[in-house]
Length: 209
Image 1: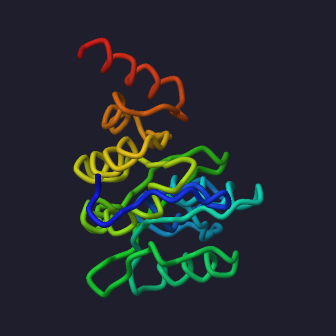
Image 2: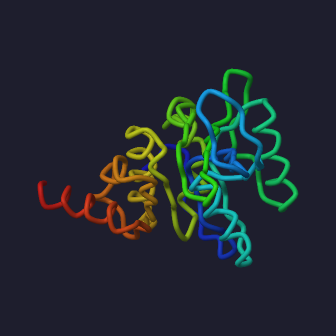
């Protein structure tokens, strides 16, 4: 049992969601793009991150998810946190300091709206969303009806999160994010939301064990 953590049933406790808060940048040209020059078009900022998106959807169903994540003291972090606070959601589990660069994904589309290229700068999620940070919120996890984790976490952070949930018999919902990351906690989850490719990867990992 976690030292200093006593499980207390809270009928109003919402799910705990651990993972990425990301600023997505979507760039779509209005004419076919030429290499090595700028092209007129539209650029939009979108609030993203797999865990953040799920948490926001859950909040719209009338419950209060508890988000554990990291953002920086930068424009992207400000946009994400201001929206979170405006929705009346807790920011206690969201780590912020000057060494963190908020995760950003830039998606470039073609004139037909199909993804042409993308650049993901999300390494700070793995670097700063550590087991030590997550373990501070043991009381929230042990009283939650559900723990959701996304695969943007490092393997040690995923392991720590799932161990805490297992200790108090809290079901785990795993969001694989991508095929490459889908096998990280395949053996301990109860629920998975995945496309067919991630499902195949998870099943293959179970067969090979």
